[in-house]
Length: 298
Ligand code: IPE
Ligand code: IPE
Ligand code: MG
Ligand code: MG
Ligand code: MG
Image (cartoon, rainbow, N blue to C red):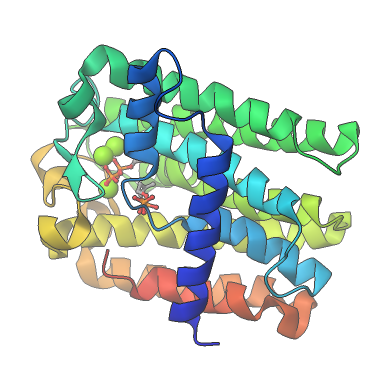
């Protein structure tokens, strides 16, 4: 099946699972559930849960990894990612009015509810992992550890967001750039493939290989995000373009220029391909996704 069709099916599978795992909009108190659902179902690419599923597939050989464990674990990751976007857009952070082609959560529900919706997606993610069916408790603890670490302050998403915000207006150095991108974006993408590998019962060298792949696609992903912020329109991105320069963010184009940034994204994809060698043809989709991450236009 061509990648585009395959991804469309996977997005549908992720959306259906997220719907099952999230309280209905009518559940009391309804506002928070409506706010959570508004952002969750605003039309994300679902790249993180798909990476989680495909990492499991690379180990098991089941091309769509039909077991619900990696699907639900990937959804937990998507909940954390969505919470990070809701908070990233708040006036106190990037102050963005558009996300996933729609007004941001705080624009529709107000700041208080947007902060709480982010918090609630975090706790729902943890609950989702605790309640995964068909996994030993020790495996669930590993998954929780992976996701909590990747979301956290030490080389994780929150730590990266702190460095990103504190870096605004500072001299953009390669060291600072590296630490921001690995943490704010790389950590969660890498966690996705590690979690998929854990769900499929991968051994330590398999998880290590997936981790390397995740590291490289994670960095490529944020390099491209920075490039698209310069090159694409807000319509194409579904979020406000040109914001990084306006807010004097430390980005790849700011440090290296566009040309070198493009080359570095391609280099990261090549390293990601090499990391997949131990999996042979079972990693076909992971290879395709690494290329897609570099070629994407939104
Ligand atoms: C945007 O992530 C934020 C970054 C970490 C660069 P995505 O580009 O994956 O956003 P969605 O989930 O598709 O909206
Ligand atoms: C956000 O990075 C990363 C997280 C949400 C953790 P950006 O601020 O570059 O993401 P966009 O461009 O607003 O999606
Ligand atoms: Mg930001
Ligand atoms: Mg932002
Ligand atoms: Mg960005």
